[in-house]
Structures are given as C-alpha cells and as structure tokens.
Image (cartoon, rainbow, N blue to C red; front, side):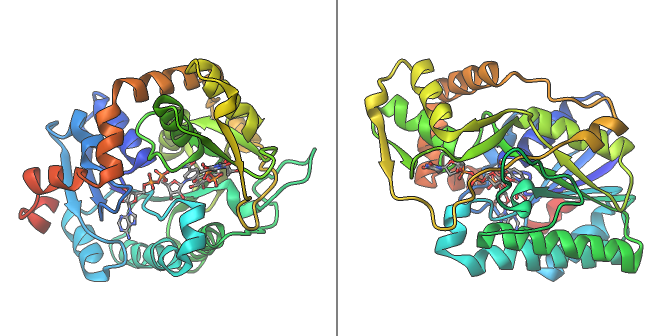
Length: 342
Ligand code: NAD
Ligand code: DAU
C-alpha cells in the first residue's frame, strides 16, 4: 500500500506514521508536511530510516507541489492530518486557519480528483458539532455548530470533502475524533502544557471555572481507528471516534498535579477563551457497530505514561518550544527537496 500522510510530522500524524511503518507489511509512506511550529521531524526519527519512508516538505496550500506529489507518488490511500490545530491560535489568526484547513483541503481534494486514490481519509474533529448540552451526545447526523475559527474551518473542510464524494465520486471518509492526548503533543494543548508547567513548577492556567468537559482519547486509539477505517470503512461516510472518557478540565489538571507530585496551589484561574464550548460529547456507536475497534487505553494509565514520556524527554519540549527542531530538518533533509517524493 502507498500511503500519503499529510501533517505526518505533527502529533497525531507522526503517531500514525510510526505505527504503520512499525508493522510488518510492505507499506510505503510519504509524509507531506510544511513543518510549521507544530511539525517536527524528530517525531519521525524512530522510523526515518525504514525502507518505504519518504518525506517531502511542502505546503498543502501550494497546488503545484501537492499535484506533483500525487503525480509522482500515486498514493493508494491519503490520510489528511495537516491543519492549524489549535483553537487559541485560530482566535488570534483566523485567516491562517481557513487558508490551511479549508483552502488547503480543497487543494488536496483537487489533486486527488486528478490522481484518484482508493481512499481519502479526511481527519476531522468533534468540535464541528459545537457545544452539546448534557446529557446529549453528537452522532454523525448531528448538526454542525462550530463556534471558533478553527472548528468552522474544519467544518468547511468536512463539507468540501463530502461534496467531492458526491460530485466526483471521490472515495472519501471523514473522521471526527475527540480530544487526543499522549506523547509528542506540542505543549500548547491542555494536557502537555499542564504537564510541562507542573514539571517546571510554574502556574497552570485554567480557563474560567475549568468545568468545561472534554472527551479524552489516547492518540494510539485514534490512530488504530483510522487504520481500521482504511481497511473496513465505507467511502462516503462520516465516523465519530471518541475516548468514552468525559472529564471537566479542572479534574484533568488535578490528576496531572497528583501524578507529578505537585500542589493544587499551582492552579491559576485565568480569563476564559472567547466562545469557549462548554461540553463536547460524542458517540462512536457507528464505528463500533461496523468494526471491533474500541478505545483500549484507560485514561489514568494513559496519563501516567504520557507524564512519564514528558519527564524523560525535557529536551524535546525545549526544542519544540524554541523552534530549534528546524535545525534537525536543515541538517538531515534540507536541499533534497521534491526529489524525496520519489
Ligand atoms: P498538530 O498541530 O500537532 O500537527 C499539524 C501538522 O500539520 C504539523 O506537522 C504541521 O507542520 C502540519 N501543517 C500545518 N499546516 C500545514 C500546511 N499548510 N501544509 C502542510 N502541513 C501543514 O496537529 P494534531 O493535533 O496532530 O492534529 C492532526 C489533525 O487531527 C488535524 O487535522 C486536527 O484538526 C485533527 N484532530 C486533532 C485532535 C487533537 O486533539 N489534537 C482531535 C481531533 C482531530
Ligand atoms: O475536540 C477535539 C479538538 O481538541 C481538536 O480538534 C483540536 O485540534 C485540539 O486542539 C483540541 O481542541 P481543544 O480546544 O479542546 O484543546 P485544548 O487542549 O486547547 O483545550 C482543552 C480544554 O482545556 C479546553 O476546554 C480549553 C482548556 N484549556 C486549554 C489550555 C491550552 C485551559 O483551560 N487552559 C489552557 O491553557
């Protein structure tokens, strides 16, 4: 199988690429990534020398580069992770988010129309459903009510992907996952930021009252769901992927402090995020009815392992925070350019 993985140097995309390349079969993987602040080739170091791994630094907004990558690599399957993925950044810079998440997805879909893969997996988010009042849960037919520029840009990309399935018979699957956590997550998202701050003994900034609820999904469970859908998913369909672990943020932060052996006095309530969704909740009943997939990680165990990883990798945190990881790219890859695509 020839797999094109966009955003494969980021948190979820690199977990997916490492997992696929660690398997025995003869999968060839081309990671296409612009290496923004969130993309780090160090994340792919464990598989970088495996036969079948290739990397192309390219921007999904660049129609020519994307078209050429499809033309040269001819993927059987595309898994599209690349995105501006942080809600707070999308509030600071909405148009960057629209340009990558919506327009960039349109560029990829156009290339896929010209060089059709067997399957195009568009990786999306439960945030497109907006805040869900308790005790409700969103299923795949729930209305789209995005409230941030990030979630609106993702909702736009979902609709485009589904429109390409209808209009051009492109075999598209849209996945909508809940909040991921695990190793290699950039320390701007709740869990890695709180771990990093706790380990540094600096305040942990909790937005508002901290009673916002998120459903936590281990990144490996998310990636396994995508693998299952590549094998068994029905083109044209949307699949929710949830962790079945709803928790208020303040509870997550308290557990992190306990596991890091730090006092709750480090918690600092700060002004709330604008338009902050109060509660995300979704059902993965459809995916579970059509496959054997279930979330395998228990949250407390996953959190303990994640903290262990951050404790063991302070250098990684330092390098991604300082942007120094780009030196790694320049040392190992720069100058080889598009030739790496084949
Ligand atoms: P991330 O921010 O860690 O990684 C994003 C990757 O995309 C980076 O490697 C970055 O360099 C790359 N990228 C950004 N803009 C690009 C561009 N214009 N061209 C090419 N590459 C570009 O994100 P993540 O958390 O791994 O999320 C991956 C996908 O999963 C996103 O589409 C996100 O919407 C979705 N998602 C994330 C979560 C979560 O909790 N993190 C949950 C559900 C869905
Ligand atoms: O639900 C899936 C989404 O989860 C993904 O689509 C996004 O890509 C991903 O970033 C994530 O979005 P959130 O906004 O939920 O994640 P974040 O980690 O930024 O915030 C989680 C919760 O924690 C949210 O309610 C805001 C709160 N928070 C976050 C940060 C960074 C804080 O209270 N303090 C913080 O410093």
